[in-house]
Image (tube, rainbow, N blue to C red; front, side, top):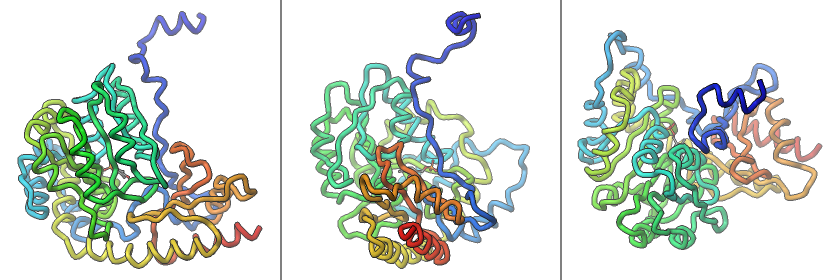
Length: 369
Ligand SMILES: *Cc1c(COP(=O)(O)O)cnc(C)c1O
């Protein structure tokens, strides 16, 4: 059979599906020996709270379906964050919730906007829903509210904003978020993805709790994958107006969060001391890593998250790809970000003291070769 014949005789995905570039996760293996510092997916180096681990291990009755409404977990989140539990949905990672938003609000002919270096899951979710991604250019690797507003048309359904953004680590102040919301038509849904909110130590920053609580067109997503150290269990949540929560609840999987994740999530969100320790670790190491890498002569985008974007010289002999190979062979696994249009950069998650020191030392050797 010729290729067209074969295609005619088997199921074919909807138009556009096969044009989606799959998301490439951070590598979890080095090319070197036994040592491995996995600094490729922004997981905390401290692991989960011991209480979360204990709750995970104590999960029993695996033959039973989980509570499909995640009621206890929603109650715990609501208590800690001062929210209305009825306006929370928990998800199998916040990625699931971002996709639900896209599926519920975007269809063929619709547009959705994200910024130039915005989290790649947005583009995939928009395309998978049949929508058209619209990219707003950034200034200094930072979201530009005016550029987003300038791209709104009567086909725009959703604006996705990671604040702080991954992979850049930059953020926009809450005033700017409010200006963005105020400038959007009321029918456009603004998604504030606050995956790194806990790490941000800036007086002018807010995750968006207040806006998602009061505006009819704003939702906020959060994750247990980063500061809570539960990436393997897949757990996130979304907070927003009743009508959006209602729409998303109609299309989500009825048992989208598993029992072990719920148990661990409750213990994790209640262990505020552990979160504070993780913040403190980051507060110590984020500036140190930034300064030490800059001292090697590389440019680092100022980050408020738990990772840094390291830029290698344009057109120089020392490329990001070469650095990645060199680091990986020595047990340091960082993240290439070519898929974000940043071929000359690597993203490094803040790790343990040992991992951070190793990366700086290996980078220094690499630059001296
Ligand atoms: C890591 C990350 C997420 C979290 O995804 P999960 O599915 O909850 O693991 C969401 N948004 C951004 C910007 C991220 O970097």
